[in-house]
Image (cartoon, rainbow, N blue to C red):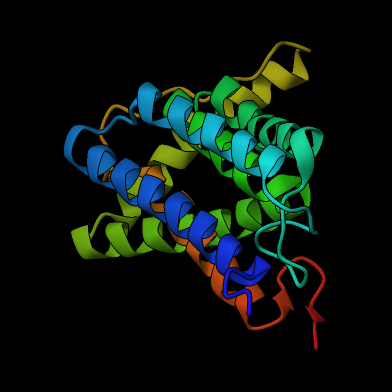
Length: 203
């Protein structure tokens, strides 16, 4: 009797991904940066796992298994591409973009769409919680006006918009926390047979 099933292999791979994300969260909270070495090791591991392990629809799917080399690479590119505009607008750090690309290397392009959506929702809720805890809602609204209006006017003049840093912060949120939480949420939902992107309930 073979006890090493595709589901068990997928669970081990997802556990490794979660461990990497926890390490990223710890360093992001402590030092407000995410290690390039951690992200590089994680991205390489995701590609290797997807290339060498038995194939399926992804490690977080109704048919657990690897996506293959190109499937992993597409996931990495999707994670990078979806977050890169926010980096170019200076609304997100480079470490956060790389971390999402690492998650994509593990989970593939379809799953990374779910992770990005969940990350944005959780990140927004965490941001509101931090602001309310610090009683800085008025400052947050003023910062949004100060940061977004110049970008809007630049767009009107056909220039590349940017988001300038506010003079006073309403609270700093390590976005690695939101990325990790978004990933965990998608893993949990998929384990219950729910696809967050289209509301599919598997059997």
